[in-house]
Image (tube, rainbow, N blue to C red):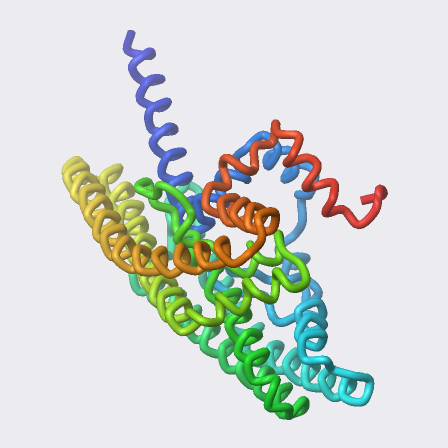
Length: 363
């Protein structure tokens, strides 16, 4: 019986540790990404793609580096879309491509070093010792990581604005002003959308996170697409303001969650070394719940304002479009609002959508 109690104690500690690790993973990756990685399909994909490598191999110049709160740079596909909208011809195409080359060089000098430093700090912050406990985690280390993240976001904002302004100076047509506004709004929505993935056990849906331009791109073409984009642009200032506010609230909330998670981890270590440490662990657990509830209250207030803008634009578009495109747009909107329903792997529609996205049968 004594051995049984010991085994049960070990089993319980392992379960507690697993729950804690999963909670930290959710906080870092976001609910949607975490669930996808933990699904049977996600496990198979990781098993197929991940191979043992040395750390030095990962830190090569060729490896892409990511942070879920930072967007990718403006790439060739996005630039081609801008050029098409602005009617860039052969006489100005070389200038636009040269401006994009300057942008890429600016990204390499201003963003990439910050991102590399950010990821090194994050890895060090969550490094564990042989006992599985964090060895370099402090509340100050979390603040440093997030301060560096904000600096990177500011650098990206500057680079994006400079590129768009320079391209506008090349085209130089007064009738392009609205197109430039649309391009800027589309890019800003993309720049701010990565942060809208903070895990919350109180989250009831993803509607507050919807990217309207993605819904438009996924469902509409030609004149219908232009009409829907015009309707978004009409409320563009309100959409930009509420999107930025939500992003900032969630970014600050994520920082507070990570600070509190690290305090829990440190108190867990103290509780294993100190007979009275359990009280500190319990107190930090209660603090985590308090912080989580406070974050959700702040997020809910900002999210509700953004939801009103999203629904207003959605309803305007559905009312202005014909029956078939309106139905397609509403479906694309709902697919983002409730991805768990529309991304059912057992559905033939999901398989057909993925098959249609393939470039060729070889893919």
